[in-house]
Length: 93
Image: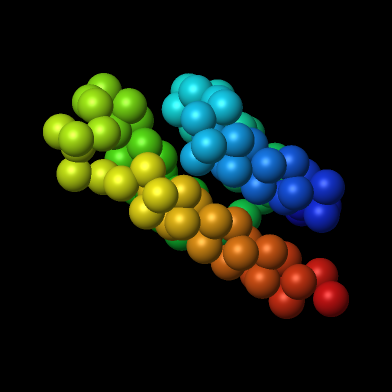
């Protein structure tokens, strides 16, 4: 189970990456640790890995040559985090 502080920390990590203050490796690690610690159903892990694989791919190319927008990837991770929080609030009212 996650707590609000963990989710806020992850959101800050995401924002820092979006603003150029963090590496893709750090972002990916933070999300994977968060998922592992949160004990979510497997479908959340599958969805997360789908986005994280695009983050990894995008880090190999310059922004102009990559088909994945950093802003769009950050938005997808933010939506994933919102869905996790919604799931947790339903499971643990």
